[in-house]
Image (cartoon, rainbow, N blue to C red; front, side, top):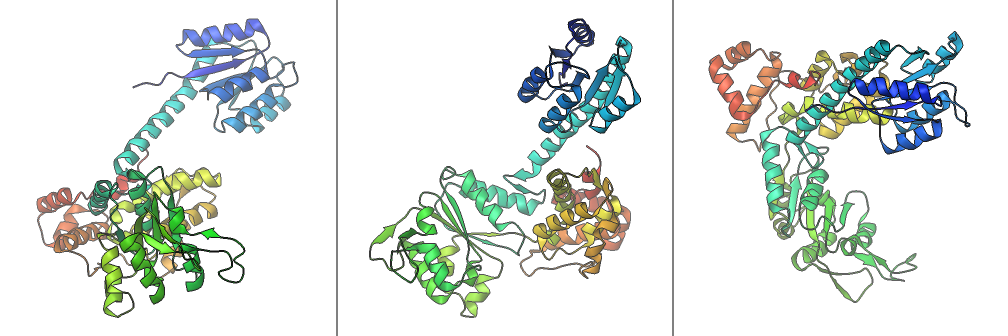
Length: 461
């Protein structure tokens, strides 16, 4: 599929304007032609053209440089060619300084125009194809705002899709930074409650008395400072979903109050006598093992079993290192745009640093590391130097096998293969020898577990 590019010609001289437009149409481009900078801005607000040809001297209060600057505010990457009959070094420097890509002098040579546009369009085509491939790649590995190519995560995606329209309570467990709230949001926005509220509450952020009134609301005069009635988060989530993050941090009293809400979807506001009934799906999350907390008597067993109707355990990033290149590229694209920096990619040595690091803060820590690297660099490519702070953190352990008590034998085999491949720099023969298996067997197991060379994600799309 080839994109049809459009060009805008801006010149107050009708003969010049129509001649240039005709030459460009003969080359197969769609061309709009206007006589003033103000008309050009109207068109630019409607669409982003592949190339803008703008006359430098135009009457009507807005000249070519001003027109270009206003278009750049609308489309920062717009390729702009300034045309003038008054060629001087000063005007050329002024045009280029303000963002013109090219500067040509009247009378224009049709062949020169054709070559110039052809060169710009080639770059635009590459950028367009690159974006298409990026979207295809992300579409393949993206579920709502969660990006992963790991089989375990895709199992979670399928489960979330299957249960999205149920009212059953969900318990999401995983280390800090693994994306528990993202999974909760995906469950909400995938189902028939998507048009209703999603209310998130951090149970670790507030002391017991404040958390109680935050969850259940309060009546006027129920305590000092309660000047009016206030609805709590459960009421605000009626018809939608309430997400209770770090549920393991709530007090024994709140655990008892919460048990009734989970069982009956009914509660009283603080200081109230009227029973409030709601229809809200409850999703709880914890970064600690709640079953261990039950065994220690810290968490009520009846509440645990009420919450644990559907259980989702998110693996830490160190157990799905195959996702690191994909996530890193995504964060580079996203954060470089937000921070206004032109970062193209991550070097192989820098990616090896990311792959070898243990990520105790998981995906959130990876995002923060990428942001720190982007802020600190003056280059277009993030190198190992920008991530030296990770090595200094003492969590850099190449070749070390990290075993979680929850891993199945199949998971352990996959993890051992992934980490050996990473340790050998993805030399399959060497990895197979160290694992004590044939090279062909290793290829079969890589195919079985969906293990792909991470560096492929670093290649320009």
